[in-house]
Length: 260
Image 1 (cartoon, rainbow, N blue to C red):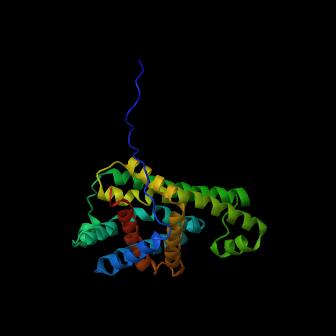
Image 2: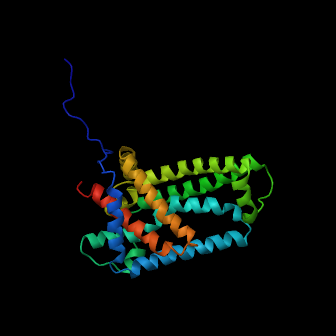
Image 3: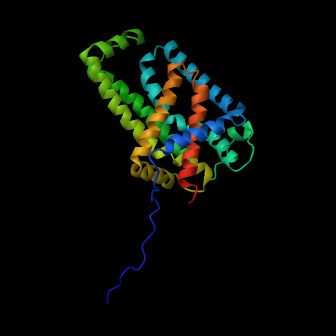
């Protein structure tokens, strides 16, 4: 006699379908959350602005300006980690609750310490990318001192070696950023909202990003545009763009997984 399976196990990483234009709606909802009692969101954005300015000033002061471009790229990788307080504000707004700044700082995620695991992983990815950038420089220019920010820019954009280095660095950085984006885009809001483990949250996030490539490419482009504007304004723009993206990220999670 043979036994046949009559039941199938549920797929814990089953991914929902997202309309390709949905990220535009997320941005609109994120802006609404930002403008609803904007004081706390602006203060959070101001903290990000100050931290960014201090880090860049420190790199120049300690003559570590060769880390500047990798550090800016690493911000995109680790940036979602610092947005959990803004996620909480959006969550409470959606539920008709108010949020104090103290609640945004002293967050109690439903998953407990699981969010720390994702945070450590994102931080390690950011550090690994910064180290990889130094190795890429060594491959193209050898073991010689960094010429300084005022000299490296012309080299990157006016010499064949600079072009190849810039292209290689862009590709490698994009791979780091894409992986970090895929595992964190939905996992961090999920860990704030649900009692689940980090691996399940990251697995669901990655599966959803992979299944909805068109929507995720648009969402990634919008995030890059908003953060890039913040960089282009010497980080001042981050006071607004960072909170808007954070609020929109919560709306992305809520509209994608809210019915589960």
